Image (cartoon, rainbow, N blue to C red; front, side, top):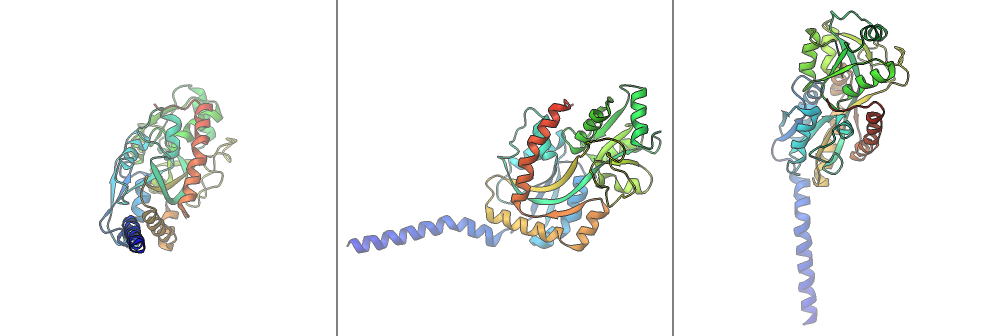
Length: 327
């Protein structure tokens, strides 16, 4: 009798174990079986949107399902990021964002999400510099000339960015800190509107990711003064770095990456990460990224998670030193 009971208990345990494993196995074998939504927390035409659309078709091929890009701009990317954080953790909502993801906690006192706890990293898509651009009518052609203009008329120079907490916002504030001039920050809801206003002369200067400005620099509708990284951009090798322009200790790098809501099954994250690495290793995609001044990255979810954990305290310190606040 005891033997029968033990056998029944063993069979029951196996059945329970199989039931627990079933969702994970189903996620691994069936995912995705419907379109996947990429939330881009910036408007169409900005750098994040440009990069997302470069990889969109290749991601569709890698996953075997349509990729639907949904632009949700506002508050330096926080509006769309909050939407992603509150979405179902089923792999069908992916946050495709900029490195402002790690900057926002430094300048926004209250976010309706936790940058670390509410997301799981999928992987890095691309990295690239920010670029300082002006309209063709702007008198200065170099950073030194821009600095001289700002010093000659204190309080009159401004710069635009894609929003509070964006890498461009930090680049402009760091420029003001390092040069000792006053630069008024004008936040936009994305790169597209900001570029339009700078070309039209409504705002004199703009710090923005290269993809948002590349075509306009190439056609002469924008002038490029400098890039924010310590190395020149392969897309614009003639444009100096800020350090080459005479601004010591200046570096603001930026990246594009993918995250999913917390508690998304690991099997789904691994599937997305595998697709991401396939996409960014594709020679055609790498060429398209390079044309925008970006370099395909890839790697593991852990690599992106480490970048997030490292950068948040770094930007908190810079925000404190430079007294950077959301405008």
